[in-house]
Structure formats: structure tokens, C-alpha cells
Image (cartoon, rainbow, N blue to C red):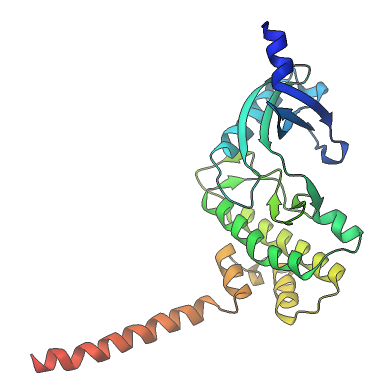
Length: 248
């Protein structure tokens, strides 16, 4: 079998996905040895640019080691006949949050995913210092059938640390997504509406400082409440130990 025949057997049903196009990339769906995957490659006008070639390589390096159930996983980086160098990811066919909002199909299930799975994914990104494109309703996908939340277009560079501005931007963008989803769903949840407003406060100093603080608020807790609980537990332990020490 020739190399050309081997490639034609490996890659089949390659199809461009116009709805998934990005500023610098084309996105395709394809089968690799019969398994559906997605391909992300530089647009033709950027393929010969060393700057953009380095960009897609950095994105692959940043995303390859990510392992979170709500982030689309990267599998490989290779040359595809007729397309070029591609980042290969899991296939994640479904509807974006943007389409669900536009179609008036946002449900309590989607809101629950946004308040738990999405926040978990943001915490993971923050902990791993992954610089990424803004989180929007277009980059949040709900998979077909089980409607599991998946973040797409996540991570283009891993840094030694993220700046406070990076974290503030994530929290602000999360507030935009949550507010829009709540309005589209018609669900009137006082706590979540308050959280969305706090994320979007015009004064950044009044927003949540970290994703952990955001998570605590969603869970109905706060850092001060947690600290008070730990303090009371410590006092209780001391109360139990003091009589024992006196008896000795």
C-alpha cells in the first residue's frame, strides 16, 4: 500500500464546519480510521506565516496536557492530506449555548451545568495558568443526547502564572454568560441573579476575586463562613483536649 493510499484509508469524510470558524482557523469534522474527530488548522492566508505557525504549535502544547471532563480534549498534532498541519480533538457534536439561547431552548439542566461544570472548568484553567480566549456562549457546547457541557477553543498558551486581570476577565465573562442564559431560560433564581450582577459589577474591586470565591457563592457559602466553621471546629477540638490534659 502506498503512502497516499494509507492516508486515504486513515482520513475519510472530511468536512468544513463554517459555524465553527475562528479568526485564524478553519475547523473540520472527519473520521480517522472510522472514528469521528475534529480538526483545527490555520486558514490558508496564515499557513505560510512563521508567526501563526508558532501560534498553533503553542496552542497544541498548552492544550495537549489538559485533562478535564468539561474541556474538549486534544489528541494529536499532525499533517492531514489536503488540509495541512492540524490540532486533532475529540468530536463534540451538539449545540452551542448561543444557539440554545437564540432558539429559546435553555433549560434548568443547562443552568445547572453552567453553575457547576463550567465553574469547575474555569477553576481548572486558572489552576493550570492557561491563557485563553474569552469564555462566551459560542464557546460553550452541550453535547448531543446527554447535553454534557464542553468548553471549546480553550487555551493558547501556558504561563508561569495568570495576572489578576486574566482572572477578572474570566469572572466578568462568566457573569455575561450566566445572565444571558438566565434571561433566555426565564428562570428567576435570586442567588444566581445576584451572582451574575456581582460578576458584572462596574467596579472590578466589588467582583469575585477568584473562581474559588465564585464557586463558594454558588454553593451558598462564603470564605468568611468557611473560616468561621473551621474556627468553631478548632475550638471544639480544644474543648475536648483540655479536660484530658488536666486529668493527666
